[in-house]
Image 1 (spheres, helix red, strand yellow):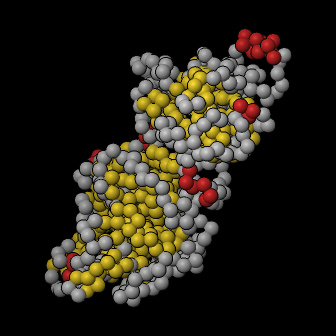
Image 2 (cartoon, rainbow, N blue to C red):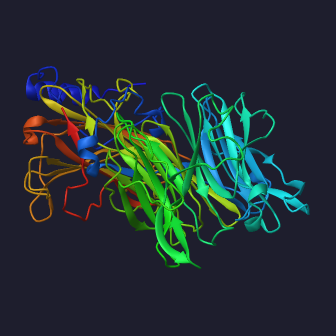
Length: 588
């Protein structure tokens, strides 16, 4: 429903002789009294749905950032997992759009389990996928086969293959013939599973699966030859060209040893490292990148990065070889790496450091990474990532008695939609294919920002989800020309808006100073202001700014900040920092 303030409209026409179409002062409420009405706000997970050009942001990845969606955060506990200590979560988006998560009980594991979800909030199941059972081991003794570190892959044809490490429970270090990798397949989105198939024999941990565009499947794993020396690992590989039906090298044969670095000796035996691999194929390239966990002859773990040749091939190494030559050793202190790449070019690396789930965004070649981001407040280990669309990933990690999980949104450069906006406090002319920015990691209050432009004006749509709207809540849009010195300056602008319309327009001169600008604003809200007896929906604000007010000669840099009385300030880039290096560029 649209409500137009006809009194204000008449006054505007008299004052301006009914200004031309496209002038932001035409047919708008300039602020002061937002319209109370039912709103259909668009959550961030429904935005950024347009087509994505591969590596479109490769040249500006240093301005990109990730932000946790606070409303998506859940702790999946014993009621869902059916066990007391779920560890080693691995989450996959299935072909039907639903999700499946694999995990084990306790750090070492004995059985592996799975649950499914349609919304990432409610999880059901808790069934065993690989269950311990009695065996007679290679020495002829009664033993037990146990399972851990299950990982999975959704194939191009929609099948799910899940692979777990198995081992003899007693003296597994001395029983390599009783250890290996085992696979089960589902052809119906995890409803039923085929019989287990052993695909590798030898002591191992932490399989990782990758399917290439050719259809070839790679199964990487920690090659843990503990029967030779206690700390002697490396990353090994077996491959399949028939959707995982058969594997090369075949069962009982040595795998391809592909990523390993010598870091010391033990009892005259060379020790190698590079374990717990996460591997991706780079966009528009055959090159593969692996993130591994690495020893450096101390009690600490570090992350190393290794790169295949341009043909996507890893060298097959002998027992005493290191490789590949193209690598970056001990980049960060940490363990349990996971690596993904967005279609737009940004790579994302997750890992555990000081028992915290940590994220870094990197460039399109996975060689340079930015500052760490630790979104979860609780500690744990063995986290993971999964990409679910062009702008979102899932992050998950164990914590005491539960699995922490949340969605993360990618904030990066926008292209303003070519559109003349009727600034009327209504969002129906905006589309979910519009590119959007997101703020909302600190509390349930969250905001999105979309941008459009015509020949004369720049338009913004702010949508705020807030269950408790306060009269003191507001949003700040910070703007600065891209051609400056990288600092907030005289050409920078700050527009503050709220559920009640325009709050202030400010310029920078040693600090933000309120100055009148020819800015038009119209707002609507759905709820009861400063009334906690009910639950509100939120508010939206449309803004029109004449381009002449912005001194534009190229892109416009934007920072978005939300102030909520309950959650405080939440922003893409720290508003106390005058550096604009991490502001988001908007191109026209």
